[in-house]
Structure formats: structure tokens, C-alpha cells
Image 1 (cartoon, helix red, strand yellow):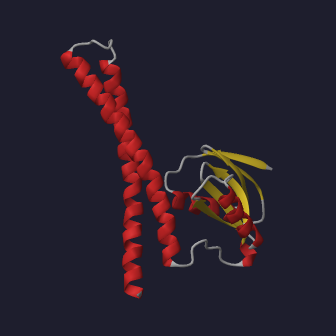
Image 2: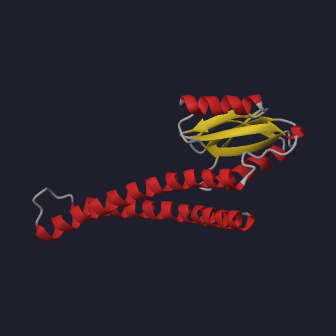
Image 3: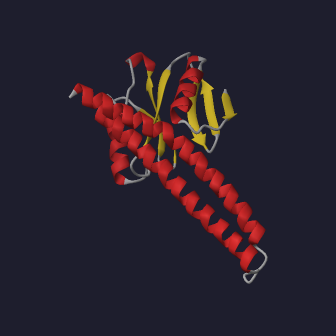
Length: 187
């Protein structure tokens, strides 16, 4: 039977944990589109799921080669969304870790850090631009039309999104810092 669950996640590790909990309940994850997860019936804990942010889109030749490499090692590609890929491996084959060393974990978290930072900067630029236009139109005169309040509202909304992306990025930066400290201890 096919099950569709609508759910939003900002933290990929919590999303990954939830997918594995669903697998433990006998639900095999089969497809994803924005906030829409598709599951089918399966034996309890049949698969272990992992989520990864690729360096390039899944259709890029480097990503295709990487996904083929994973497939040759028993990892199944389930779905993708932008650069995020959803992967699974039969639980009967043992643990499933994509990153076995500190350097690869740091590299992965840095990709996520750059991802959130990019969106954060874009939102802040849009916010400050709209707020500046709105304030300028309010105090200098409405030479460009009556968009002052609209610009202020849009600026406030994009500022809120920028702060959200900053909040999402802070834990990633902490993880990178912790991993670097751990690496320094081991060296």
C-alpha cells in the first residue's frame, strides 16, 4: 500500500532520523517532492536511510559518477530534491555511514554551511534593499509610486527568512568547530 505524508524539515539529521523511525514501523521511503514523502509497506527496519547534500545537482556528471559508485557498494538512490539526495541500504548489510572520517564529515557540514549561508545572504540583501527603498520613499517623497509600505513589508518578510537561515546555519557552524577540535586532538 502507498502512504503519503506531508511534513517539513529544516534539519536534515532530524529528517534522516524520522525516515529511519518510519522504516522501523514497516514503511519504506520511496519518493520525495517538496514536503511530500511517499512510503510503501515493507518489513520492519528493512532499510537504513541517509541524506546527503551533493556538491552539484544529481544530474551533473560528477554526481552521477558518485551515485554510481554508491550503487556499486550496495547503496540505493531513492530520491532527490535540488542538491539533496535520499539514499538507503538494506539494514541486513550492517551499518550505513556515508562519512567514516572527520575530514569527510567536516567537508559535508561545510557544504551545508555554504548552502544556508548563500540563502541567508540573498535574503538579507533583498531585505535591506526593500527596507531602504521603503524608507527612502516614505521620507523623501513618493517619486517612485506608492510602494513604500509594500517594500517595508517585503523587506520585513525577507529579513525574517534571512534570520531563519542564520538560525539554521549556527548549529552547522558549531558542528564544524567541534569536529575541527576533535581532529586537532587526534593529530
